[in-house]
Length: 439
Image (cartoon, rainbow, N blue to C red; front, side, top):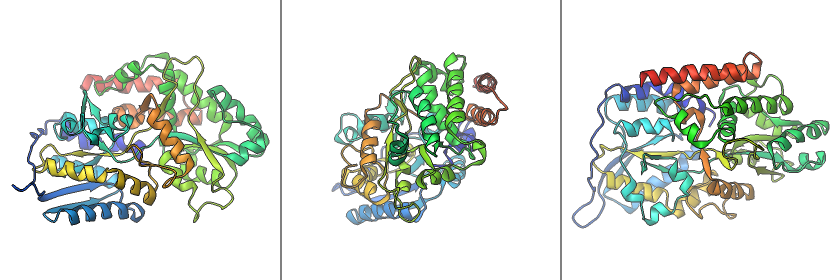
């Protein structure tokens, strides 16, 4: 999670190969089945969770699938955030991408799609029980020009986790407006808490705020045009308003020097009873219940709420920032049907429920995340994400690398007092113009 904001920036070398003339393959339709219908063949599967606490789940799914299909062999590899970017770059240049490979949604995945390196999965999903099993917002994150190219593995979004004890002590309620959120900070401060735990050492926490506030201040059609890979104009007044609202919120409710504080350190302030709330990902909920690191008197004494609406803003007030992680299928694979069948198994309701139980990730599969395998806060958040009118995909993966970098450095300067909303947007417009010229 913490490295996501560098995705679009550090991965630009991967996609330079695609857009600079590496010819895309022709989609194969091989079934990987015998004349009796038994699946056979060898496929490769590349994901990005080598940590043992996650790998145990994927290892078991692979083992269960091959046990049920003796004629199938799966070459399963797991590498971390940065290594997978490097590996995808090398494999793309050699035209040797795995049959199934991880990709963040947004322009990261879209560049593989535009380059012809991702199979069109629409025929496997449209009107099928498998396709209907996913939350539409999660499946839609991997749509491109009306077709489905990716399969989501988890469900993720940004919400505020808050200490119920802190809110009670300060006498504040869950805010129902952005102005109310900011206003609650005075009472929380008086009660002895840092109102909002915020650390921006790696840049991405601020970008997540900006993704959300851009969605609330700027109309969706304007954002879609500006975030497009051909480069937008970024002239809508809502962009500066979003930056100003963010700066005002952090100045009022956060600690000084947030660029020198890590997100994890800020989170410890919440769980140790020093801060009242933090804007975090639903995938991080497991961290708040980890008995090996979290004080016993915090566990179970927290809840969550989505970013409240901004009165009078021109954007979408019911959008939630977030996006699932997921997989693409190599269009050049000799066993596309086999790869899809494995993904169906991986995302079956049974396996999806097991994923939530074992590693704590909410699932995009309808009915897989329940009170029996997840916390009440997680179940509540999943319902909110599934019902959201829009999932605003992380700014740093949906926009071009140049625009993402301009935002990243600009917002860090904004927090330091070296930039203004106007100067940040001037840098963003310069970056967007360069992208447009090159396109």
